[in-house]
Length: 548
Image 1 (tube, rainbow, N blue to C red):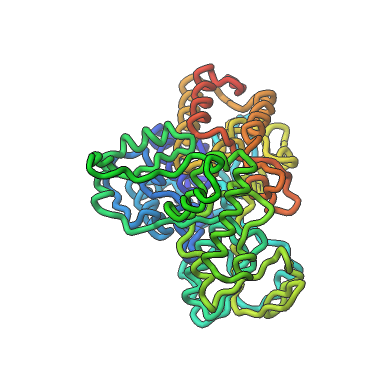
Image 2: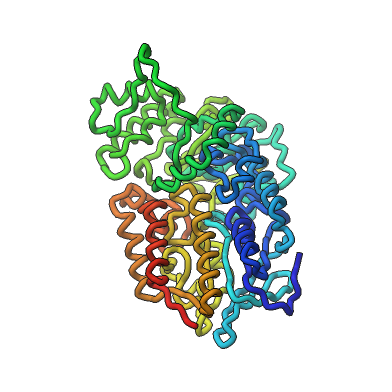
């Protein structure tokens, strides 16, 4: 519900996904007067908007769930190991209701402006519904993957059939029965949706420019006994997550006592370079293609990575038994681990169906969209439905679209003209009391993002409490500290396959024409990052300028 436009609030929270919901709860627990603003008609953020067929978590849901409430952990019963979008959205609605968070949310409303008044030390936040909210603290919980990306094809509006983007899928779904469907893109949304759509469509054509390395999700119905044991073990699970640099503990249930009469199962090698060619192929047979993700040397050793990449393409050739499809689906000219890991359910299996084909845009790029389809340099393809699975303007897209102005009327998008400049992914110099959750320069999308979200929300909440308790009016980064942190983030990424010369990914902004290139997340890990955040606080918010 909306609060009075005349009221001066303590805080405005923009977005009610996983970060926004927890932020509302924490600020409520402090007793602050707040207003949350949400563009959608319901809570959930990415799990509200991304309703495309096959959308699901890419981590076991036991670990990709809130840890802040022991009651919530015990009350909610998951039905799948890798929960799907409808279940996760239901879980977030349950969370909102359990903690009475909706009372502070105004739905179907988009923020247009957030402007800082230095004399009054207040932010004025305006919306497309004509609201004006004035607050001391402005908190962006808009998410890292929020602003849909559309490729700039010639005559993009020419197609007269139905057009959809996976990130803005209709709430009531889409009936593709008997339709000829084209899917452009092969990131997570394309990989997850193609197998589901292919079962319904008369024909499906996948247009792909940069095929991904994708690995079986091994999803399954949740075993009730496993879930019950996880609930018993949750304290240990969360502690192990805190001590892991990815925020993941790979929970497998309680360890079973060893039977002295049964020989232990062999385990995969730690490094692919320690194996002979014959041993490498044998380990793929023994452990599946997912074993390639377990070799530690493939993350930083170019030779090891090249071996793994070649083995992946050989596996694909053997699995598909179709030279054209295997070649078109094979990642080329960029290393394994360059992009966000993708997991799938029957993705390659879909391409064994007679009604599914693939167009390799590396060989025959798109020339234009037509009224009935797409023309490539090779031929014209006709279809009834066009689906863009082309991802997002990641990490900065949503924030840069807003009119955010700090000291001296400085616009944030102008300050970020050559790439985002933040201290610890939390604040930007010149924008006092303005916070972002999982912003550029924090682990965010290269970690269990919900684990990182909780850490950020708690840091921001504790910071606001500290400011209020000590009558401190403003906090913002010192420019030198911000510059040093940006350099630190770049150093942490050096040597990784994610910054290899041949790697183009949305981590770098490469998927958006004209976007400044630079590695945006922090690769040193969540445990290291949390310790650095704690050290900053212990030293009196070192690197931040605090003014009374």
